[in-house]
Amino acid sequence: MTDKPKIAFFDFAGCEGDQLQVANLEEKLLDLLEHVELVSFREVMTGHADDYDIAFVEGSITRPEDEERVRGIRARAKILVALGACAHIGGVNCMKNFMDEAVYREHVYGHKARSYPTGPARPVSAVVPVDAAVPGCPIDANEFLRVTKQLLLGMRPTLPEYPVCVECKMAGNVCRYERGGLCLGIITRGGCGACCVTEGAQCWGCRGLAPGANLDAARYVMQDRAGFSRTQVQDLMRMYLGHTTAPL
Amino acid sequence: MSAYTVHQGQLPGLFRLWAKLYKVHVPVQTAPGFYDFAPWEPDTEIAWDYDLTVNPLKRHLLPPREDLVVFDTRTYEARGVFQAPQQLLFGVHPYDLRAIAQLDQLMELGSPDRNYRRRRENTVIFALDPLRVAPDAFWSTLGAGRADIGFDLYWTKIGPAMFFVEVGTARGEELLLAAGEVERAGAAQHEAARRTREDTRRRADGHGLKFPWQELPRVMAKAWDAGIWREKSSMCLACGSCNLVCPTCYCFDMREELDESLGKGRRWRQWDACMLPAFAQVAGGHNFRGKHLDRYRHRYFRKGKYIFDLIGEPGCVGCGRCIKACTARIANPLAVFNRLWEEYA
Image 1 (cartoon, chains in turn yellow, green):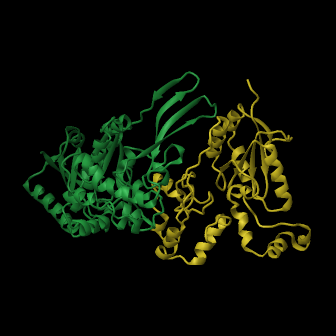
Image 2 (cartoon, rainbow over the protein chains, first blue to last red; image 1 turned 60 degrees about the horizontal axis):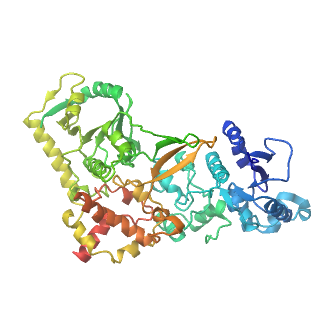
Image 3 (cartoon, rainbow over the protein chains, first blue to last red; image 1 turned 90 degrees about the horizontal axis):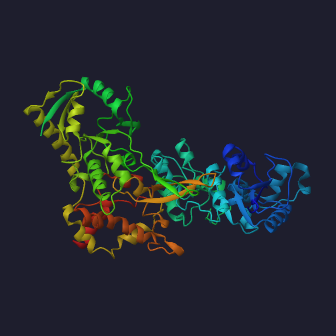
């Protein structure tokens, strides 16, 4: 029997909610741990080792020391997986990128702002190469399991490439637009089961843009057809998609 | 064909009885202006006058996600999974009946789909004549306003509390008579049902194809290079909504996943859609319908020609669900077919 792959969890700017989703897997997590050795996961264990094969990285990169640290993780890990929206696409942290740096530093650090250098929030992939991602805010625990199992089996992890609409229709929902609402499901990568719309809310785009998302059509739907203002659309698109190249 | 007259007062007893034998699904209003099929409960209010349900009935025969095989990678054992609940679909409009009849034929072609067939065998269908016509509907001009096959019973509301019920199968008749005597329909009830259908048809006929649907494949055959494909598809979100709400779209994708033991797993299918870019993607990343235009055109050729060539009728029943579901307002078989008729007839 060969050694089990060693896995480690790391967090940057974020709420650690994605690691919480992993911890909440409970028994399934224990089953998975039959196949891996956990060397670092501060939400569930003490201790840490710098010898690991798969690094799950949560949070976005925003401070100079973050960059240095994530480069170190990249150098040690054979496989680096971005865990959750902040690591995958920058997430809500990127909202600050549209504000003046002095304003948000002052807001967070008060009169000590000068002592804490911080810059634009970015996804991990903006700093180091990322091998795979588990999208979402928070992540879908079953998707984490699937991606991890695929990695353990030597497969390339797969994510749905279709927009949220597909799973929304599978769930049998009435379209948010038919009820007079705004929704980013039309351009957001599926895989979440359209959970937010199913629960009566809307899609905020936390899983990032679907590959090939037609942003011209989306703008036509949101503004010209549904009648929302450019500001309303922009605010919604900046919530999670601030780092994308989408014309915001 | 025998027919009966059923009074509203007889319904609760019948439904209670059917619900013991079947999972009964009936049309209900889910929000103002929105209808859908929902499981019947003793206090369910049936939407007798619904115009269109948000979702078609295919999910009861071809669920969005369905396990097909469970396997063990250590013992190399595999076993088919068949789930086929006893179910009764009550209140199915004729265009949806036509759609199910199409699925029945298409799922039998080539290698018969055993999972579909088992579900279908355990499904009783009670049709219902529409009293209202949805704004985007054009089923009447596609000949889907009336169905002669594919139902166990066919209900027509002929009065505030009275129904004319036509028998389609022995199973249907048995279920109708299961709670006791039911009055045979007389000439007056036959006539009332005919008038009800005429009323609906008159309203439905006003909106639809400008040409006989039999001409569709001939028109489509000339329309491969039509300008409408590029014009409409540039705004396509590639979201698959038009496919997914379509009562006759049945394409699915196959997936496999191991459980956390990494020893046991299952294979399932889930709805797929030809408007999704990955639908026609094959090994090596090649995609034989990589552009919006290719996919958009393909869907209309499926509906207007390919399915027609297989079974002799269009793969569109004119329900109008895709027109409603398309947020970019480009999905519209009626508008596309009528325009192609003008350009290529």
